Each structure stands twice: as structure tokens, then as C-alpha cells.
Image 1 (tube, rainbow, N blue to C red):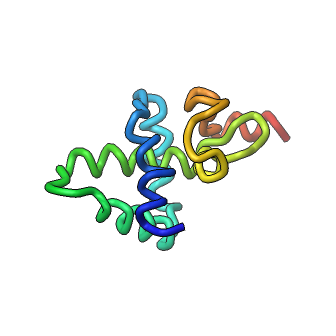
Image 2 (image 1 turned 30 degrees about the vertical axis):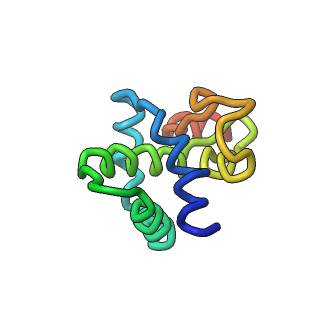
Length: 109
């Protein structure tokens, strides 16, 4: 997937996502787990936006991106994989995905 496709297929749908405080607390713990490749994909795709891109926009979109990397639906499909396969939100919405806490993961075992 090239940078423009990544921007259009992944980042553009994520622009509409509004995370609550509980989701932001969960993703704060996930920043260190973002791979170098995932960071590079994000940075390269941001370069596809034209004009001046505000830091606030980049930071909010990165939060949404980290959420998408870690959030899964009830079938274990990550939000990022769903967007790649479906090319946007079609049959599911962002509310279909969540990041499980350590307690929730423990309950499943």
C-alpha cells in the first residue's frame, strides 16, 4: 500500500473517530508498542496531506491510529486490518472495536 492509499484508506476514516477519556487512557499505555514500521507508515502518509498540517491534527490522528492498531472486534480482527480490507467503515463502526484491559484479557482465559 503506497502512502496515498494509506492516507485515504486508513487515516481519512480515522479522522472522524472521537476517542473518549477511557480510550485515551488505554492507548497511552500502547505508544511504546507501536513498531518502527507502523510509525514510518503514519509519518509517510501524513506527508500526503497538502498545505500546512497543524500539530494538533497530527497528534489527534496519531492517537486514533494507535487505537486502530490495538482495538479489536469480537472476532479478534483489529480495526486497522478491518479498514485495510473494507477500505473504510462499511458494515461496522468504530464502536464495534475496543482495546481490552488486562483484566478483560484475564477473564477470557
